[in-house]
Length: 115
Length: 170
Image (cartoon, rainbow over all chains, first blue to last red; front, side, top):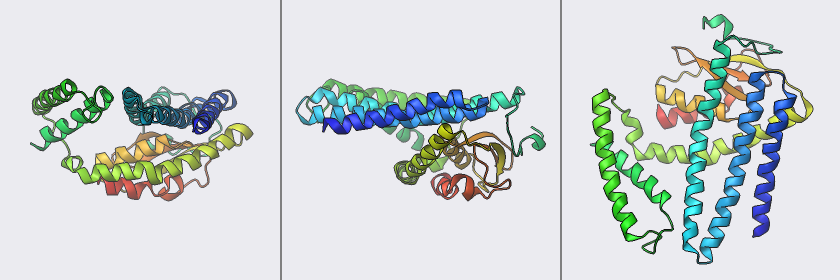
């Protein structure tokens, strides 16, 4: 069972690392947001799942106080799923409105929309 | 009344999640259960008062538990699947550097603000697509990391999210 936790942590860390690499690979604020916010969210989900599994195993072994570990991590998971897109959207919108132009664009529908 | 009930249920749930594992009635101790009921009742009344004072009339649709159940089904089913798929796609683009970014317009056809919010957040949470702005007609402007067509249909950008957002919140 402990290997399942290691596997979840491994997947999570791999995506977190990809998110960091994306910061260096991508050319501008918007594309970097894709890597830096989304990949890390997905990585975090796996790490939380690993923590929840660990808590659940200890809970099943009779240490009832570890139910808190599971439920707290679940709360964090829900909250990060709600706040992450809000934050990413706010950064992107603020960047566009303050005149940072996206690079390498093939199409920009927003420019003609009078925004 | 529905506002009070919803606020009560959610604060109770929140408190119970925070205090899980504190005792042996279920997994809660008696004082925590009593506090849960007490705090939730107070919070529900305060929420009702604040809502009335600020003149907010909550969308009645979200007071329906069926829609919350649908949201949960959506979150763990089709949404998680397409998020995983999109993550692998973006991982490939991070490694190879093959990007073709652009800002496209997605005509959703959704009327309610709530449904538009659900859809915009779903699009933003999916890697590769990022909602930047929206206009009065409910069209979203989405930064897309690999533009497949310059005038895309909604399904090309966000799969069946539009249908689900309509089902949950329209």
